[in-house]
Image (cartoon, rainbow, N blue to C red; front, side):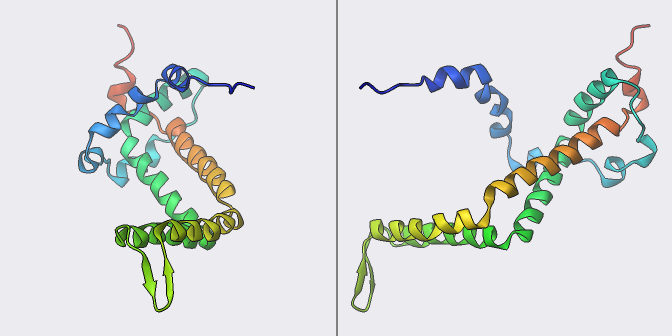
Length: 176
């Protein structure tokens, strides 16, 4: 029986993923957060209002996602840190995996010798895998990831849809 081959480049080219993230890859971290808006502007309660219709929601979300993009990245980062601090098993598992890979990499391909015990790097990676995979399933990363997506979506899209555009931007799109 022949194997089914899926052309991944056709699937990914339709989603246009490489072009969507090209601007993020080309920017340094400092320049990405250079347009971080002050908290007083980000949480300006005087500009909060209920949108009149769905067209206004779309207009506000399109404007605010571009204008406050760095602030929204900070909100996502803070929610990610909060989700790791409230799921200590997942935090422990991530530290174990990263520390284990780092420690095995520091051996430089040499065997680990502790007294009469000797282990190759392949055995160490296998041992890390045997310990980390069940611990990962116990930690529940999928529920944490779904919570993070939901909490980020509600907070970011909620802010973007209720935050009104500045007065000068509100009238710039209208024809006179």
